[in-house]
Image: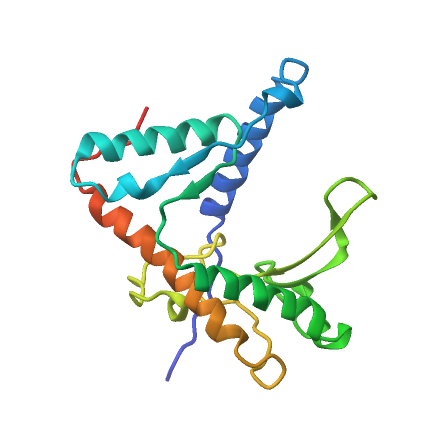
Length: 207
């Protein structure tokens, strides 16, 4: 007799992510009144040196990223090697998703159908500046089909589950969408894999 075991989400990873985000927010709030808009900058980091054979050079890039993450919280990167054609395609597909799909077709991909928050997020859900500006989004996460290396099978969602929860518009509704998203995502994830490979076991986390 076969017995099916239902997956019980592990809240540990989710709680860790939430507590870390809360701690960062509190640290930023503690600086309220001490920082002005003039103090805020988004650094531009050339990560091409991450591919260097020199450990010291790679660590220098890591130090820049760490500083950005603990100050502005944001940074731009250059020297990543992602083709311009792939970057233009993902922007084109984003425009197609929001302009060519009808409201009804987007509703089929609504985030309320996903336990992971993936799918279409209507403009009325969130705003960027109070009621002054709305944000419409299409959310998706990692899946092995997007990864050019095929993945290592170790990826887990924040709730500890392994299932792929992405929702994609059908090819008949938006031809080429998934393929070009895959092309861009694959190029970006390849950069990450290369950096991890070059990082080596001899690099210790920065304190």
